[in-house]
Amino acid sequence: MTTSRSDQSTALNPQAQTFCSWFNLDVPIIQASIAGPAGVDLAVAVANAGALASLPLTWDSAESACDMVKQVQAGTNEAFYVNYVLNFKPRSLEAVLELGVPAVQFSWGVPTPEQVAQVHSSGAKMGIQVTSGAGAKAAIDLGADYLVCQGVEAGGHVQASQPLEKTLAQVLSVSGSMPVLVAGGITTGHDVRHMLNLGAAGAVMGTRFVATQESLAHADYKQALLNAGQDSTVFTVCLNKGWEHATHRILRNDSVEMWEAAGCPQPGQRPNEHEIVAYEPDGSPIERYQELTPVVGMTGNVSALGMYSGVGVSKINDLPTAKGLIDQLSQEFSEAG
Ligand SMILES: Cc1cc2nc3c(=O)[nH]c(=O)nc-3n(C[C@H](O)[C@H](O)[C@H](O)COP(=O)(O)O)c2cc1C
Image (cartoon, rainbow, N blue to C red; front, side):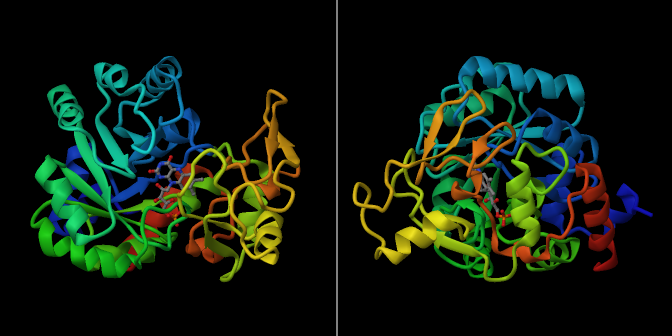
């Protein structure tokens, strides 16, 4: 039996209550931006199940971004956020703000004052991912409504270089009553409760949502997550074709093994640098060390690509629907309260 919203809210700290009330959430659980596996179906299912859904839009054209936003709006009346990695130009920001997205979350940089003004004048909430107390202070000064504190335990491209709990303490020392979400290695409702007890307003989960029925991750990637154990992830700069100088955490695979065996040489000198290992759904070739993640429709040796994963992967043992997962997390969260 899942706990009702009123039961849950009594067990929330004030920052979590604020965050949940902004977005009418049943639980302080947030789907991370998981570019590749994320799509409209996952976002709609997450939003309708009472958690905060996400649409990562960094690499989409304005046309395709708007199309996805409209499809999510048609599928749910509940809230979701869009995400932009600011190492790249946020091409669709203005267009999706016009469609009335409820929130925008930036990572890997801070928005310009003009972008901040655009977000706020549209009425959307603005979140900024931070990885230190100084970063938190800068984001607050810019006008963030909430912060996302990422730890080095995270899957995907990892802005962080410190453990989550250490960074959270630094961020909370400057954030006052502002909601601070946490991201990195969180996979169970017990983890969520633990983070709220430390002062977080909600838990952002990426890898856990990759392993769901609605996720667009390739079946081999989902299976690799199920097979993974405690030592299966690696924090590296190995797969950097397409996004240079960005650390990432992935499941250890033959690309990493080959590169490490050769002494971790620089781009251009890596073993099998131009080998085609897989193909996009449209048949375009994908070279070894490209930073793409395996999604439905890709063919070839997709496990040589970046199977992004956080350190919590050893606790993922099933592929539930998004609703089944959120119900399970909510129950664990309540039990741990
Ligand atoms: C497959 C995948 C894709 C990701 N893509 C993005 C992205 O587009 N933008 C972003 O800010 N973070 C991205 N991340 C990082 C997540 O936002 C989040 O910090 C991370 O998933 C949290 O760690 P966890 O996977 O252990 O839950 C991605 C993570 C994964 C696993």
